[in-house]
Image 1 (cartoon, helix red, strand yellow):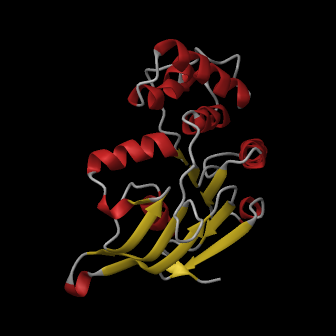
Image 2 (cartoon, helix red, strand yellow):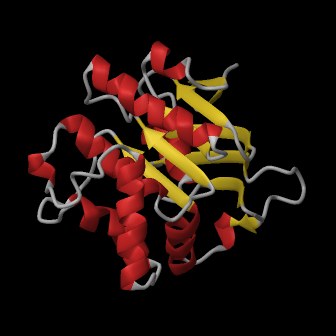
Amino acid sequence: MAINPSSGAIAELINISKIYGEGATQVRAVNELNLKVFKGDYLAVMGTSGSGKSTAMNILGCLDRPSSGSYWLLGQEVNKLSDDDLATLRNRHLGFVFQQFHLLSNMSALENVELPMIYANVPVAERKERAAAALQRVGLGERLRNKPNQLSGGQQQRVAIARAIINRPALLLADEPTGALDSDTTREVLAIFDQLNQEGMTVLLVTHEQDVAQRAQRVLLFRDGHIAN
């Protein structure tokens, strides 16, 4: 796995700022942010609404470009990549889990998990085998053919996790992954993240919940667009 040769980090934000608007309406969502993420980290990001935590995650996930500063991911300076190269980087090296699942309603659990591999040109037989194994891994081996409306919220989030890890990402990003789940289901889903990290996957999750954050190795508290702790 390539890293940033200057720091040993798989992902590094250097003096990153993100500014929206101009003049009196200008908002500095992220302000001179510095962050290093190392292989095997399990990080939780907390902060009030507007603190910059989700903007920072979007930059880490190559979903948004910074206004200034440098972002290095797996030895590449992300700022200099084209949109096509960014899309390839996201597909091959990043996994995403969101609060609202974002599953395609007309597709089965298996087909939803297969999607990232289609974009990565994985052969059909391998695609189906790997998708089935990923769903088995998150406890849904008996639900391969179910569509999202035939699954509970917790089961849908498990499908989303299986989809996020299917291309064996270098970094798994989760934005409020338990926000739509009850307490019992939250514990089940968090146990999956714990296991993935124990197996060596690098995990960064954004949360408002202290008990969720406590599962991580380190908690990053965002305030006014930068890390306050």
